[in-house]
Amino acid sequence: MRRRFGLTPTVLLLIGAVYSLLPVVWVLVAATKSRAELFSSNAFQPGTGLWDNLVELTDHRDGIFWRWTLNTALYAGVGALLSTMVSAISGYTLAKFRFPGRNLIFNLLIGGILVPSVVLAIPQYLLLAKVGLADTYWSVLLPGILHPYSIYLARVYAGAAIPDSMIEAARIDGAGEFRLLNRIALPMMVPGLVTIFLFQFVAIWNNFLLPFIMLADDRKFPLTVGLYTWLATGANQPALYTLVITGALISIIPLIALFLTMQRYWRTDLTSGAVKG
Image (cartoon, rainbow, N blue to C red; front, side):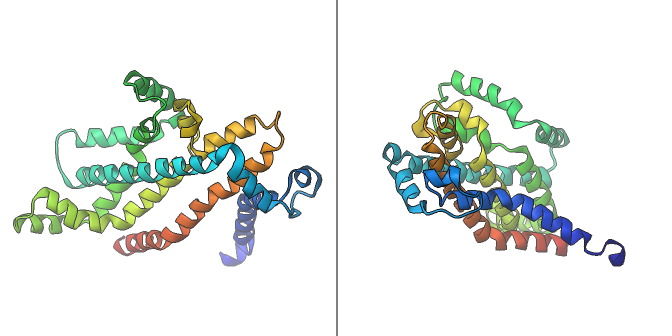
């Protein structure tokens, strides 16, 4: 089998890696260029304007870029944390409790995975506008808390990682349901919950449509919407192009740092799943 395919899988993986990383390399190189170099030099030739771009990015509109960065960290950090907590409790309940309608709820969750978020954006805006939460931080945080795919993952992980015999033994020893969840279930689900948190953090960090619809005040914008507004006005102010590119480079640094930091938990999750399987 190895002789038949030869180096084909390796070559295909290398092509995929180059295809995925090429835009990132371009952003990295373009962020080093001054305005003149951006449109006159070779696409992958480093420039000399990185420091000036950073200074201008910080000074533009009294540093609103860093406010957008803090907003994005708030939306992604708090939103992913709340979503992970809700997913953990929901997944554990669906996996370890027997109650009427459990299968119906699980099937509805499976159906919810198939519904594109684009379809839900307008109804969510209308509902939140009705209760006066449009153009607030809550209008971006609340829709992301209940995530069907995360609940599905938590349900699968709880079913595999927590033995029923351990739960029954804890109940016989007198442990209440809250203590059982807090002391036994959640610690055993930590590797899976870290994976869910990472997925949700990246999804909310990169989300564009929902905050674009919900927010009108640009001081509440996340990075995606803020940089888009600069890009949209770039036709009249070409100077903003260098700020958009430099801002895009900075916006991916936290995601890379988060991935590298949490990678060992992710590996633990995969390894433990392989052993249990």
